[in-house]
Image (tube, rainbow, N blue to C red):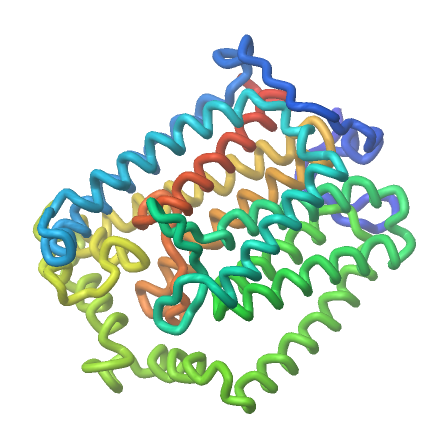
Length: 410
């Protein structure tokens, strides 16, 4: 039986999947949409599906508690954010169900993946120059009924096009022109448009996703580590130039606030300081559901980026630990789906989505606890936001689609 997990191929490459994937042909793309509704009750990864539903239900409940006071203050209705989030969750669940019965090989198509990436890139470029701005960050497009954040879909398009190029070029990975240049170009232009939006948290996420997918793709180890060395040097140089140019002075402010959250609690560190107060107030078992004090207009974005702090305050260390454990299980199960995927493309897409969700959760928790500078990263399934929640659930549909065709033990 072929072994599973991260291992080295015969050429020294690193891959997450088993040896069978390395020997499978690449040409498995579908030229048209292929839905299989007969499989709706067959082949689904039940543990992963239940985990998604638990995260979503828990997330909506805690978002409601965290948003109640802000709903009254902003809209005169404490249930305002909860009702909208439930609507988004319902739409997202329908999308997840539809995508889960879609053959994921539909995306393994040159036209589909390049058009998807190109459209999302163009929308992000439009948002950077003509979109709606908040706190000097231009990331949204006002569609009238909703503020659409195209960078959320750009992450998905990035994962898909990366997986496609890696799957197609894998037989030629011994030539660095095929295993480095395409990924460098795609990652580079993606980072540039996100930088124009002043969306540095997304830049960080895209960088980690890209490097991680390259690591598990089967790229020769020597080539990979040489690329990492060059990438690290370029990143350090770019950051130094940006800081010296003063174009992103808020980066230095956030670093200073991270180092000393009590330095300017009336201004720059107000959010971080009150997040720490909320976490510290929770103790072992919390103040009780709905009993948070910091959510009463002390902690900005309590329903969004800092919902984890409210969880800690109301449910204590135990509740926070439950959230962390749920995301750890999510990552483990996601990698299990990736390791048992039908082919290399499915493995890379599953790994990319798992890394994205796991990384966002990890960074959000670190920001809330001041273990990392404030970057504006939301907590998947918990933070308020229609675009993000619907897209995250659609991504879960892709993972379920991959699991249906994989070698998952039922």
